[in-house]
Image 1 (tube, rainbow, N blue to C red):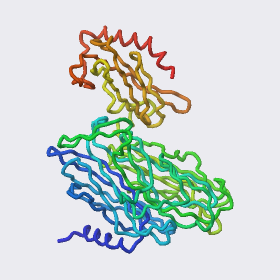
Image 2 (cartoon, rainbow, N blue to C red):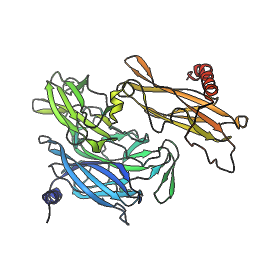
Image 3 (cartoon, one colour):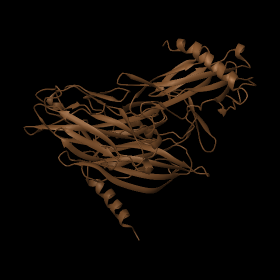
Image 4 (tube, rainbow, N blue to C red):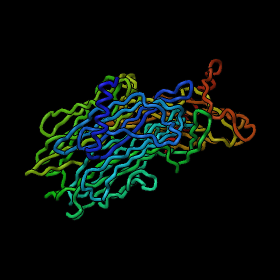
Length: 523
């Protein structure tokens, strides 16, 4: 007998044929890997229509390695009847037979009427990459982003839309327009009134009144490794990915409405202007399971009147008005969101003489972390180390002319990670791979053969003019004989028992720290 929830699902899918499409976004998080190699993955996509309906995605793979969909829920995020849109978050839990790459496609629906750039049929593609990465030792995770179904701009005003582009693996995230030949949209004609940077900023320049109206924006967001990595499948097959190779791709599609002119483009007159304590665009916030995170938003407009805040994000965001032009968005993650990062975007609207005006778009990323990070000094102001940062006193191995790399990740909740400081042998190369993500590389010469060299490091963070430092971590790098063309022990992390050699090693570490560190700080 068909369950009520399934009947409702079928009704919603059918009804989507008569309700017009206003874009979509899909992201994913891998979860459990089972003993037989199968993987559980959670896919979340925004369903954006003129009514609160949705349509499911289809498997694109010929061999149907998209697996089995074990559960599907569709929950309304936000509905704006005067804007004629509704956004739902659809969560699909799939069990796939292996971590092999697969693709999903959305099609069979039409965009809203009168799209200026001539798009009628909707199509979107997601490439889901779950293979294990050599740099993190974990399954790949998609970039995280979201968008409102519709954003508006007056035709006479310059405006930049800096989309949220966060990657949990620290990858380089880029955006491009969809490609018709890759079946990423149908067709993929970009709006003539927009220009797009690879860093995911859409720029609108003033245009003539004949160019006013709704445009379909069809983008693809991709993640690229910051150095060459290997992706390993559960059957042992490996694929090399260079910094020029996209790992996965997700769609970002929405409607841009170019509206009639506004008397002044100066923010704070007709167009709402954000004020503190509104977070900066692309700010990163932290919370933990069952702990509520609050985003306070304040805006002003001296001529028009602030009316409301509109948002996109995870299900169950609570929106409240705290005063004129003062709003609060609250979200409490559940256990299933533990370890994930969720995007939230918002705009504020104002009205004047029957016209409605929109602020610029702001987005934040909310990371759901272990509660211990939020309840101790480390992780608030003091940097908190995260994997793959090696343990203190770990022992690493390399060979002559073989580069050893130490990857270091640190986070803070309130302060901002600023830099990495270190002490060690000559010719260590330091790289910043992303926010709070660093790399130390050292290549020993022949004269270091058979020796062991200490490397110590700390991460610093800043807040309101004050500087805070993490605890100190040190590793020992042993240069061993390189037999053959590859070194068997390279990058092996083994804890070393310092019993019996504590004084000698500590003396070396202390001596190097005192003598070398002042010179390493000269950036």
